[in-house]
Length: 111
Image 1: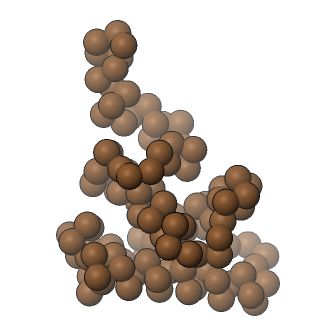
Image 2: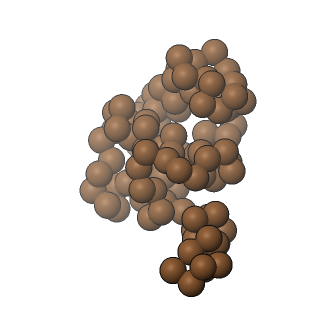
């Protein structure tokens, strides 16, 4: 992430490690990502996630709610699951939203 001070960089690193503790290959809930969630994958998406959370004034410095919300973002971005606990559409690109299976189904049936 550009222009992070030492405190923000530590929070980012701690959050990445927190995600790995829960959802990484040896994590408490590694089954959610079939044991395939890596630090590289998290780092690919974490900066945009944090920036959007800050803009929405809901970033809590990587607490459990941030972790669960980011989990749902990753589930969709990694094409694992679309029926997530939280509505994370505001964290997705327009293209990702258009490609969601639910959206396709509603268009198919003119809903």
